Length: 204
Picture (tube, helix red, strand yellow):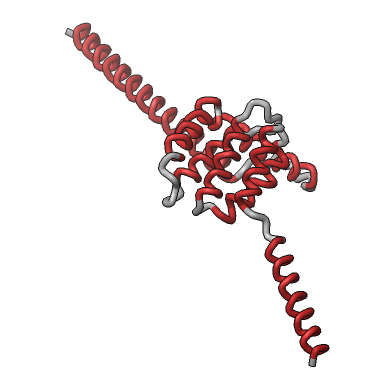
């Protein structure tokens, strides 16, 4: 009986220990936020992003998650950050302002961060990034694409346009010639009439 009770106690203690171990394996968001801020203070931006990102994604409705996102924005605006991204700072500030449960004191801070990112050139950086990505994609396609055949044959639309242009020019030329001939015919007719008048004058 005593042995059974001892085994039960050991099993219970083991289960409790396993439960505590499993519970303690979950990082505390407040502690993780503190570690992320400490990483920012030491200018370890890669570690700060690794710590603060999950806190924001998992707790964005809570103050701890919103503080983590604010710290991430600050990291992207920090000119000591060699990998800073102004466009990302603007995007994250807009994301922070879109949270319905946002703590009121964070609103003016997020607005200031957003406007600061735009002032420093977030839009221009975004455009340059898009252009760079497009150029890289085009270069990649060109690198793997098979060389396309070339042809000196005039395209059908170009041929039709050329024929129409030539037709219109011929019509204009024909009209001009007809007008010229009509003028000549009139001039000849007037000359004939003048000659006839002279003949009649001579006869009389």
